[in-house]
Image 1 (cartoon, rainbow over the protein chains, first blue to last red):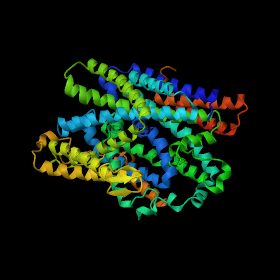
Image 2: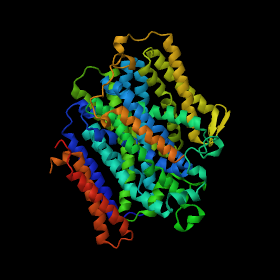
Image 3: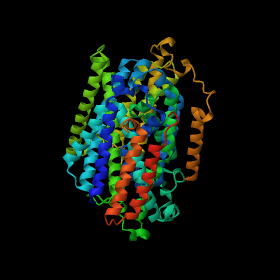
Image 4: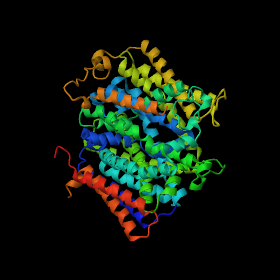
Length: 553
Length: 60
């Protein structure tokens, strides 16, 4: 793939705009709250698009296209089984506690609801995960640019990290959120032409269904038996592992996305943020799953004349992660090629900035201010927040270089993140809806869930991974293994939390008002029009999601 | 103009308008092989960009 002047010019214009946004926001930053929480002043349309864009990083865009090529339409389960239901649940049931408690972060909510040790455990694991995720994202960007454009690895690392550092350092969370919205439009509008021309080239959806194996174009039909579908999953494992544990764990408890709703102007907007975001999210498979299915169709003998191939790796196997870049290279001419490459760069930078801004909020408020330096001036915490932004990006750069030297570190870190994230939702579910849950219960539940996740991975094998304790059980795909690990860890956390809570002393009711469902005054929506109320909106979204599942059954 | 740059909607509109102009100029000034795709995309970006800049929100 070779870029020309027009392509480079588009990339340059994008860099100028994202840095420009940082400079424009800079003069509005007066306090630590402005820098780290946007002072709860962001309009609904921006929080909603930032909410979805924070999850539109490179792993999502490139990873989902790769999954589309590998697993077919079953990849849409990440959206139509996982994300939408969890986002509606977050908006209707959980945002009132996050927003109403005035907590500045998810770990701070845990401190108010439970105790300091539960907050500390969550804050430290989250801070470590975000900064390393940012580094992996940076490594992936540099590696991709090196592979497809032959750009120098070091220059890609330092330029992209430098740009993210400039705009997050200048404008903090607001700057990151504003750029996420720009990145959202760029990714969607930049990749839409690719989907349209590639779909036309493949002969349309009907031709795709004719050319591919039926299990690649039916979302549910072949899930009655794990051996009949490419993911190797039974539908119950999918619904519990992905639909309930992993999706709710991510969308409802991960501060990286929840933070975008917590900066809304008022409670109504905070609740509507994930629900409005669910509308474009529902359509995202058109941009990130369909291209993968089209790519594998174009490789069928009947379409050999199209001359498209997914590149292979050193072992001669299809390198699915190259599906999207290879489609861009195949279909985009000079000019729009620059748009496509900029969209890829935007997805990496969006993911990195999201991680860095979540990291600096949690580190400053939940680690530094809580455990190290209390009761200092606001200016002090503003400076710390800015300093942590720089340090976070420097750690990301170091992580990127470590990842370059040790390929396995990416898999290892993703694995550890899975162990920590898997059980989280049980803690929040019990904490918000069962007032008897105690701090000791929450803490030991999290610990037991994480240990259970590690053990489950150690006794199961999928695609040659896992089984490091003893390989007792074989699972067809790595994705299936991840769902099962998450399901086991959630179950262990859930029951450990209940058992420990029953034998330890709960907080008095007065301290739990606004933090637990039964002790919180319910929001009254009756005076608003139906399309402003979260419950009717949420039900409408769920009905549409069910219909989509039915159409592509 | 500078005041408008504080408005994210205007900034996004301006970005897509600039990119659209680059795409369209690229077709006009070079013998671009994939000119049609650049023209269609540039036109859509231009319409979107101008709409974002021009359509003001209710509060204004």
